[in-house]
Amino acid sequence: MQHDPLFQEPTSPSVKSASTVAAARPAVAATCVITPPERVMTPVAAATRPTLAKIRIGKHLNASAIKIIGGQDYDTRQPVPLKYTEVRKRFLSARNNFWLPNDISMGDDKVQWNTGRLTEDEMWLFKTNISYLTASDNLVPDNLNHAILENITANEMRQYLRWQMAEEANHIESYFFILESFGLDEKGQGQIFELYQQIPELIEKLNWNLQFTNNVVSCDAPIGSYEKNRALLEDLISYYIFEYLFFPCGFSQVFALARNGKLRNTAQQYQYIWRDENLHAINGRWLIRQIIVENPKLWDGKMRDRVRDIIHEAVELEAAFARATMPNGGIVGLSVKSYTDYAKMLADNICRSFDLPAMYGISEHPMPWLNEFEVKQEVNFFEGRVRDYQIGTTLEWD
Ligand SMILES: [Fe+2]
Ligand SMILES: [Fe+2]
Image (cartoon, rainbow, N blue to C red; front, side, top):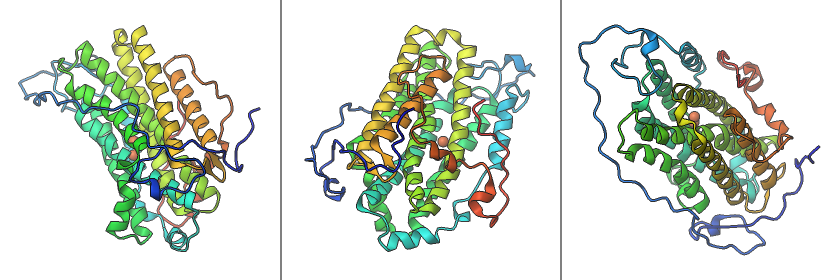
């Protein structure tokens, strides 16, 4: 059985730093090396965007005519016939699970924040974490809006994705509410939120997803074509990784703090966000698989190899993120190694989701205590205090 890294002193890190933030990072024994991102993503010029299809005199269609992408000769604004009933259920379930950040009391965290309870390493980890997550939660709806929705030709999926956009906005509001509740003014909040623009590893990780969005937007091939669908599929894979791998890894950092009795109110916020992201991932995986089922030629050997490369790139980015946010090797209970192994374990799960060979072989969960932070029973987190959220959705993968 693999040795459990929990509560060990972290090991020495390798450090890369942006000059603008080097002074703000915790002091480290190693010399900071200013290294630019290895991959420079050049924004792609936007192609001419297609206009929305006009409504024409049409006819009633059978559900069999509806496609998840590339559907033709019908208007996607009509909600019936309903073809993908599970997607409709997912939408209704997500709507019932909607929550509000200000339902969670933040008083204990405010005291901790203002009385120096966090170490220098913990402060750096938290600040970089929430900065990245805020930027990333902005990327997801941008991607849905610019790259995904216009390709989706089933009304029920369009509905779900619109709701997802609202949930992502709610997550941003949660991050905003956390810093506001600490008593930080606009300047103080801004100094934390802007960190994602100052750290190469964070910039590169965010730009990695952006390139997939831009590849769809700039693809001149018509909607529904093989080329467009290839770009779309790669984009959906990258954002499935976002929801299923990047987000949980990020959340684990604050859950590690909470395990040590720090920022537990903030961790509650993250728990609810994690539940939403998990459901987004479930829907994302379903969408990808359905596209493949309906367009089997897309899933050729070249595409399967490409997906494995994409997953590998994501793990490399996550490892770099770990080193940047934990420059001294980690905090009590969370090492860079266990964090990176968690990313690898999730990456292998993603491979298996698409019937691809696993790449890393992490057989033991490096952070099994994360289960404690899954939202399963409302009363555990609100101590019976607040409204009765409906837990109408299983968090199982199948
Ligand atoms: Fe989100
Ligand atoms: Fe999400």
